[in-house]
Length: 95
Image 1 (cartoon, rainbow, N blue to C red):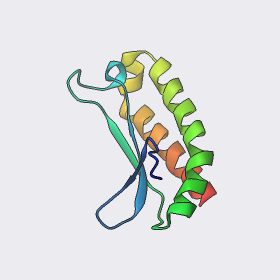
Image 2 (cartoon, rainbow, N blue to C red):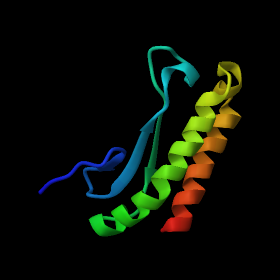
Image 3 (cartoon, helix red, strand yellow):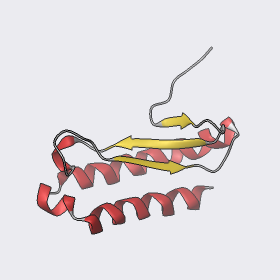
């Protein structure tokens, strides 16, 4: 039985990664969303799932915080870099 997990994808090298799209209201362009991708550094589905179930709720909370910022504040590259570094730190703690 196949099941689908949102945000969890496999690249062409069979490595698992997480992919999130930030909403239009906080991205620089109204036409393009900002895509945030993080490698889970594993080819094993069971290992990816163990990280997924712990990390995704935290990441969704951080994205919700990011989306609650006003647009000018959220567009600053420092805020986006902070969001990405927080994700990478959280994922590396779980791996």
